Length: 331
Image (tube, rainbow, N blue to C red):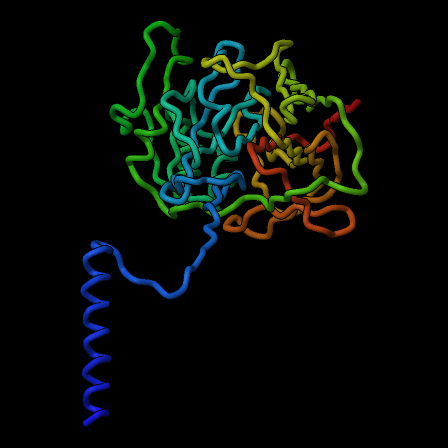
């Protein structure tokens, strides 16, 4: 009998406690242990930078061909590209392939035509390839790459002509509108390995250097000690975009490559396959090494002379496709 009374008393206490807790803790759940979690922000694959909103992981790569002549200035959007390739095309002029993923500027250009080298640039990335058009041999080349092709005819409102500029240097694209056209894979593969320390031993301190492209196209890069990036100078003038931003990437990669059919020829191109020499400029230093790529589906691999992976500073990277035998004077 006593045991029964004790049990009834315990049940009553528990019931009263439950009623008290429910009246004073409405909308809450009792917990016994506090837990903490650490969330690592996503990283944009083509820059190695944190991407807190995760936008880069929801988009493919978008490659836009951009004119690089004096008539094209000021260029738009190239300061916000993740990666920019600079290549020699017919006539010895240079042209850009600006690759976007983490950012989507409203205006990019002037947009110009495709070249066969672009096929080898975009093959491991996929995504969207935007261009104005091109010669049949060049269009046939890019049509074999795993990209969604968007030219002026098929772009709709994603490309437009600026009536205040003279053709052909007046075609521009909206990166945001082009991203709406979708593409695969999403997100793209990383093109580089990134580091979070200095380049280390075996490097040379560099204040500025010149990539000696043909004719009037040698480009000078100067180390900006404030922004810790490389300021771009071309045609004897600082390159500033249409939004007033100085072009100044974190890394400049000079790949020495073979241009088939001759530098500046009408059908000239480089296939970016095989091996070659490379000079990487990052963190105010230069380190020499080698580049290699076995198949067009592979990304290019960069190594030091000693065989270690040559990693980049997180941020924008420019890749200069310089012909073998050209010079890169440094100071």
